[in-house]
Image (cartoon, rainbow, N blue to C red; front, top):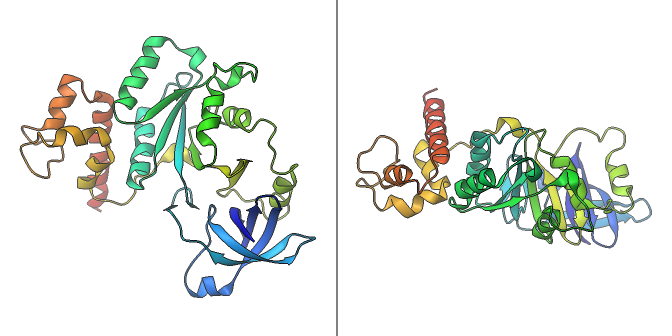
Length: 298
C-alpha cells in the first residue's frame, strides 16, 4: 500500500492511506543503515502486518521533490504565510525572513493577510504594492467573521489554493491562523477523529511537524517556532538571489556580482530610489545582509 507520512515520533511513523485510514508503522532497519530517515510528507510503501489494528512497516520511501529543515517535512508544493493586516501590525522583517527561507529552498509562497475587516483600502493597497511587486500573490481574509453562505471573506479562495497540495503554513501568534485553518477545514476531521486520537495518545504527544488532512490529496503542515525565523546557512552574497524583484534591475548594475549595498551605480538601489522596489523590502535586505555577514565572522 502507498500512503503519506503525516507524523513521525519516537520511532513510529503514522502513514495515511487514502480510503484505508491511518497505519502505525516502524521503519525498516535498512533505512537506518543507509543513514536515511523518513520525513513527514514522504510518500511511502508500507507492508501491513495487522489490518485490524492498523499496524505496518515502512518498506520504501519514494523519491522526494524537496525536503525542508524547518519544519522537517518533505514534498512540500507551496507555502502559505499568514499575518494580520493590523492588531498586530505585520512584522515585515519576520515576513521577509520567511520569504527568503522559501526562496532559498525554491518553494512557491502565497501571502495571506487576515483581519482585513480591521483595515482600509489604502493600507491594503500598500501591502499589495510591497509584495505583488516583489512577485508574490497576496490574499486577504476575515477568518473571524467567516460565513459559509458568503464568499467575500477570502476563506473559500484560500481553500481552493490549498486543494490537492501539501502546503506548509506559518504565521506569528495573534494573527488568527488557527481560526483560519479551522474555517478551511470545515467539517473535515481526519477520518472521524480516529487519526488525531491515534496520534495523540500516551507517549506520542511531543510537539513535532504534523500533516493535517484537509481532503483528497490535500494536507497542510503547521510550522512551529515561527517567531524566531533563522536564515539558512548561506553566504551573504547569495542573499540577493532570494529577492526576486532584484533580478529585473541587476543588469543595470555597473559591477558584476554587485550585492546592492555600497556599490556605486547600482540598478537595484536606483529602483528603490524611484519606488520601483519597496523601501521596506530593501531595508530588510540590508539588515539580513549584515546579520549574515556578522554570523560569518565567528
